[in-house]
Amino acid sequence: MKRFVFLSAMILSLLGLRAAAEPLAIGAAVPAVTALDDSGGPFDFAAYGAKGYALVYFYPKADTPGCTAQGCSLRDAYSELTAKGVKVVGVSTDDVAAQKAFRAKYSFPFPLVADADKKVTAAFGVPTTLGFAGRQAYLFKDGKLVWRDLKASTAQQAADVLKVVAAP
Image (cartoon, rainbow, N blue to C red; front, top):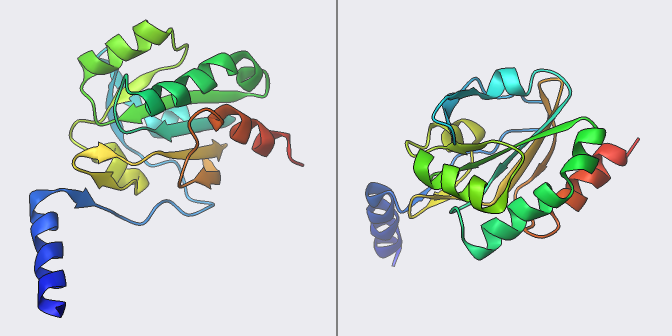
């Protein structure tokens, strides 16, 4: 039985079906990683999160029900989030074209980053399954991680973040 479990884990690992790393710890710096955003330009996470609040949220796949609900939650509360000083960026392993179409279709007022090579998910320690990023959220303040949600909500994502920034 032990041999079967070991072999199964090895096969899944080799196939890239499940990849996991340790998620960022509270107090960690914003990872110094760059990827292309939905416009095809470079997005520098460390620079984006250096001052004020920055929410980096991960979702599995653009234009799917849960991912749309999560993004729309943040879109619908965007004015309240920005009034509290929160910048927002979404990340998935989709390509630039998919991110651009997803952002346009739902009028997201924040950038979406294409992490097709999974450098960003690896830097944040976000697990991937079958190549899709896990649903997680990381809130930074002045470049340091102050809150993380390792099983991020879909429709309640904005409310969860607003509770954190309202706390003393």
